[in-house]
Image 1 (spheres, rainbow, N blue to C red):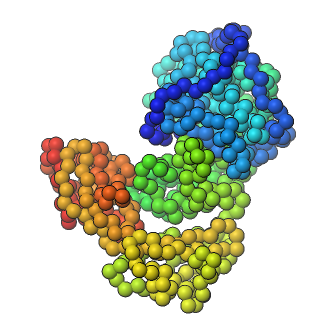
Image 2: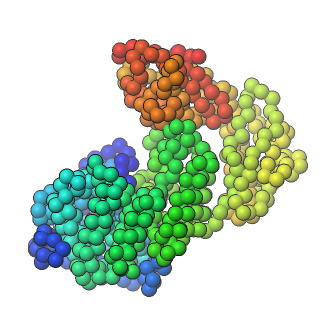
Image 3: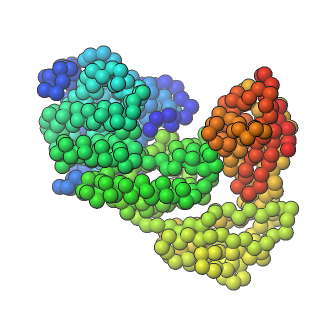
Length: 584
């Protein structure tokens, strides 16, 4: 994945091992005239704990489920800790193994540790560090995937205008990687190239370049001998996109190579508006659900049902979770996304690797940052869970409490009732069920709301015959109150009393009907890019990116949409370098 790092930390090169051998040149292979240096021989992890390999490639890939990404680490630029994560440790892989993962993908960016001219030598200290991290994972009995990662957009993307040099460097890179891991257990898999992309090309041209690289990767590795002669090799589609045209091209390429030890790899980050919260994509709605089910249907029809194993090398949501910024995606909607994802992947027979840049596992404490989220992901490895139309019931403090209804989605299970902690609520008195309609009575909600302080007053669980319970948070709110404010081209801070409510999205338009903001194709701007809530400091922030995109002297009308259903209208005008905001 590109561009998912947090604020960079102190630059630090990963530790290497003392080298006892000098670099030597390997013999020129038939595919290329480029010579590449061999790396020192490395004693790899004992095979005592390595996973057993199945005879059929698809059985091995199935045994790799579930998988996890060591993101923003060996792929970070320029060094392992540059994007804020600590150095990878053996304890990290111990944790991943203990949490039920059976494989890890270790993305590696080579360019900062490699000469940019022939013979494109990879720094031996860096290669040894990669080997060390791989060995730790193998020693825990995990399958391991390594690749050429952010090189894809750093230098490989220039292939259209620098074809021969890019191809030579790509071959030299894989020649050295293949030599370093030639005798490593076949529980190690190689992935050609992460998210292949080529500047200023059509999809047809991009597919051609991607096929050329995949073929070169295959030839280099296979000719390197040793365990590489039969090692499982992963080939990505262009952009690792699972669109039908991209999958068809990938299948054709795999057939042309006529090698039963190949694996297809794609990525999935969901329906884009929902994945980043833009264009009103606040919910995992029918459109987002269909996008997911259609994607896995294509994968099943085109690949897995034809005997082609699939390793979905990255999945998640593009901008969630991010514990350095306010949540773009509401938790309940994210839980529904991951619940369906687990089901679709299992139905399609796909092995899935969670993209974890820093946002799921805290690498310093080795604890999950959001237990509810990871519990849903882990539950999805084996079963479905029931959900509901929302995980919130909002009760306006200024109004009398009335009964509220949610739609249940049992996902094939039976509804068992509602609980508050260990206490079961009484059906008929506290709630009723009619078909898929769950209604909490006014009396029950009055009791649950208690003193009606703003925010979550109580949480109840809808439990089903299988899977995880669905939490429903009874929340007291009143319509948020915004105040006038001034700012400049650095942005504007709007004093805001949220009063128990949560921001969902912001709509921005001009009087002539045009869209206001940096995203001019939709009135609904991108969460945390154009606007952002600051709940602790009682403020709404309009970013410099947003205010600088405004027409000078033209008033923009903003409508803030909140999860309770409440809205607040605000008007903003930029005049030269000053910005004014007024209510209503």
